[in-house]
Amino acid sequence: MQLSIIIVNYNVKHFLEQCLYTVQNAVKELDAEIIVVDNHSSDGSMGYLQPLFPSVRFIVNEQNLGFAKANNQALAVCGGEYVLFLNPDTLVPEDCLQKSLAFIERSAAGAIGTRMLDGRGRFLPESKRSFPTPLVSFYKLSGLASLFPTSGIFNKYALGHLGEFQNHRVEVLAGAFMLVKRELLNRLNGFDENYFLYGEDIDLSFRMQQAGFANFYFAGTGIIHFKGESSGKKSLNRVKFFYRAMLVFVQNHYRTGSGKLFSAFLKLAIALRGSVSACKRILKPVLWPLADGMIIWVSLLAIKTTWINTVRNGKDFGVPFISYALPAFSLLFILCAAFTGLYDRKNKTSKTLLSVAFGTLGMLAVYALLPETIRFSRGVILWGGILGGMLIFLLRQFLITDKEEEGQTVIVATKNEYAAINELLERSLSDQQILGRISPGDHDENTVCEWKDLLTLQKNIAVNKIIFCIGTVPLSEAMKQMQLLGKKNIRFLFHVSGSGSIVGSHTLAPGAAIVTPLIDYRIEHPYQKRMKRVVDLSVSLFLLITIPVHLFIHPRTGRLARNIFHVLAGNRTWVGYASTSTLLPAIKAGAISQTVQNLNKNLLEKTDKRYAKNYDWWDDLVIIFKNYRRL
Image 1 (tube, one colour):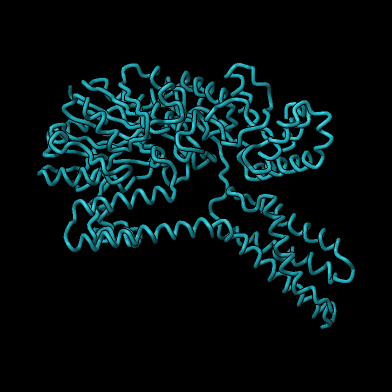
Image 2: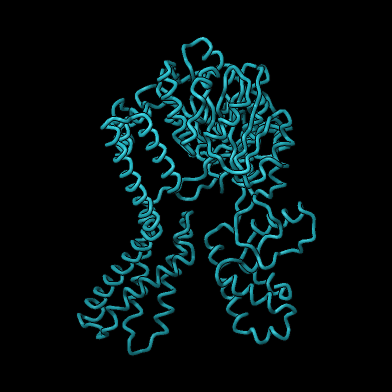
């Protein structure tokens, strides 16, 4: 057998589905086997994938053994002359494996990697790297590598001085795509199992060079790597895994005095990075509210001073309370603005204007409730709110660049493929504005344009998503289009013809399902999240206060009481999903659902999708009222 392909999966079944379809297309002319090791996924990967890919060998683990051990499991049973270690969140072009095998066979390489693009069409610098020596690591950890990305000195770790489209001898290959001679792996006993996540590819690359074999970066082909999907989103734990892996590498291979010093440096770096991450987590949510609060406070002070000097001819209000009132009103403004969504993730001009207006009205409403003895001036509150609101609006216009994207979606596909994707979108209740079909060939009727004209289309029409149907359209050609459009802030999604999912970077969760990236679930909107919790608390408090009444009219008062306390504690919500689907935005388990649970599974899931997609907090109140006896 010429080639064994080993893929380790952990909770990314839809990414792996697309990966396996592309790999199967890429090995059609090769004598190859595909082995998938599942590290105890909880997303139903095996039940979903095994029926779809009967020719793939699946190894199912009862616990998460980590990347190194899982790869070694498959390595022990594979039979290929060459072994490709491949991440599940990758897409492999049709000619990639043939070209890669041809290159490694005619070169002096013991192993090769290839050019990797992320889901936005941008080159991933970790496609080619050097060893993390003490000095190289210092440049990376200190940020000098980011400041000088093309420097052969400061960015030696990513070999920034070497061209993306040229073959190079390199020191480190990425574990996302590593093609290795089997005899070399046998000699080295595969990956070092002391690594759990990260670092095992650096260690293996180091040991291969120590054994006298060269590592090459091969630019003659490439893959798409949806970076981070197979290991989850960025978190403090991922940072710890990364630096601890570097620490293991240094302790294994740099045993001299400088190595000990470097180990101490890495431990310090882990502690510092953890502290920085913790500070960011704490400060990031409050930076904008603090800045806005200061703006409102200063605006109120400025209007107060101006009012005294111009309207009152220098006469003070004579209200001692005012020195405490202005910061209190500033806080009130921020609370009102936050409630209407000013600090939600998506930034829209209309939302900013609505929030500052609501904040000003909130201050005026509270001022009107104050006793006459401590009132000072409604005009100060009104004009202070208007001035502060204008400054807050202008500040966002200048500083915030990641405003919510508006645009339409186009699909690059044949007529039949386009119909299949539309059916998939319809089944998934997607609300995308589909502009139309892009023809993959010439002289095709009823299309927006031919795909060679995508760049021109994007310049003239607000297109922010492109779905590539990989079938008639070769993945290698789609990758070329991605790189041409990579700087246009377009999101690319992929659907292999005949598959049941669409994937792309930055999904709602690692391995998020089917067309989750295309569906705008209202239940995920921060405002609706807040209101759902407000409804839960309000209903719970009302039921708790009136519990003597329910003792006589509710059929199961004990259950009702338990649910009240579970909801108050935040362990449950009053209205939840009826199905157990993992494809929807996560919410707490519900005391009740919006429908009866004796329907078939597909119908329950479809009902839950509609509930999440069209969610409004008022609906929860209606459902609770109608289902009172089930609470």
